Image (cartoon, rainbow, N blue to C red; front, top):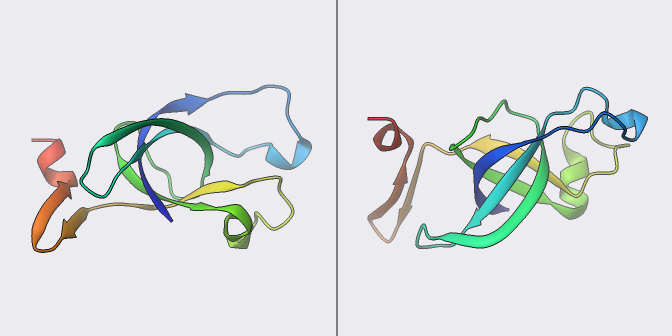
Length: 100
């Protein structure tokens, strides 16, 4: 899995029929120190994430393990909204601190 920040949404009126009703998010990847990386990725949202939230992204065949995605042409799915990240007793990210 990869940590990412939700930057926006992707809307497509013409798409594979299996993707109807699937919310697509534009994500910017985050490194282990909490630095925003220049790479972006589009992922299906399975947890109701919103813009500016930090999330966990499952990729590759693991993305199709999420219930309901087994037959969808997905290689990235948001599977969790992050509350906090600690690395070696150091707080890297806290959701509550982002919105105060």
